[in-house]
Image 1 (cartoon, one colour):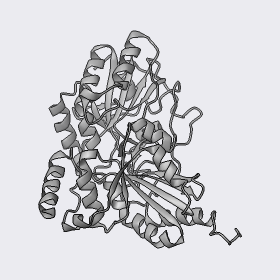
Image 2 (cartoon, chains in turn brown, orange; image 1 turned 30 degrees about the vertical axis):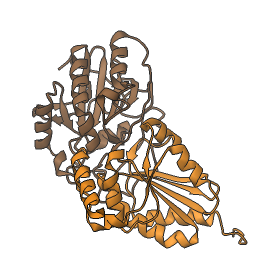
Image 3 (tube, helix red, strand yellow; image 1 turned 135 degrees about the vertical axis):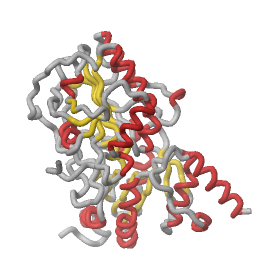
Length: 219
Length: 182
């Protein structure tokens, strides 16, 4: 784990913008893609001090894993076919980032009632299989994803050392074939933050699986 | 010969899919499958603006996407009930191109016979062309009026009632020729 830098952030969002407000009805058995809001480039990340249970058994917050160069927050899960295509790259990028002073945390916000594969036992197995050197934690209310405005997996947020958003988006431009990747967005963003350079492309998009949000107010 | 081809296609689909959440329904219905046409985001917009429909519903989905499959019956029910009122349906699969047999089989099993589509082009261009508000999560639904203007969009699963409301609003905003808006 990287430097334990206690960062203090407002739990409220600054000038939050509406996400896709017309999202699925909450009564749906698999409510999806309905973030309350999302924060934008340059704004402070929400819920930095919310502790979440990790596969190691330890509760951790984003602030607690923050690195001296910044923090990489990745919303991911186990069941999603797109995550499965990117997961070895996520592991490699995350492990390498940690060695360079970037704190890393992978967050699973999916309700395992929707997909049992997204439960803790499978998370432990997946983290071990992929060799995660970084924590893989459960967002047990899905509220962290809502606060970030995360809608799908995998979805990455790279924060500067003060916790402000520098990069938001996908891993790269080719889920199917790593060798055919033309734009390694997340690697480039990590390289930039480590070297103190501007992020080449601060916002990117890729298709992914909608987050299977728990009902609001769940615990 | 056709059956043999179908069996080979199914076998290939099963091997190539990267990790389907649940295998799509398979069966001889694939023999009556709709044509699958590659489509870019700009081609979708162009088709939505073509004369001949009072509204166009575009649904982007994938065979391995649970919420996509779950909302399909309600989506199809609304689309079929409003086809006679001038609703055009475009089902756009985001499966990879070599998963086309699985797409065809999925649609055929649900008695979809009209031309369906397979997304082409890179994700980010596709997403932002259809709507900068779309995060990339599946499923995603876009409803255009008769002039090809986007009048409704959401991402994530919807139920039949939601499809019904959105379609009815789009149709009401573009009454048939000879009728005036209330």
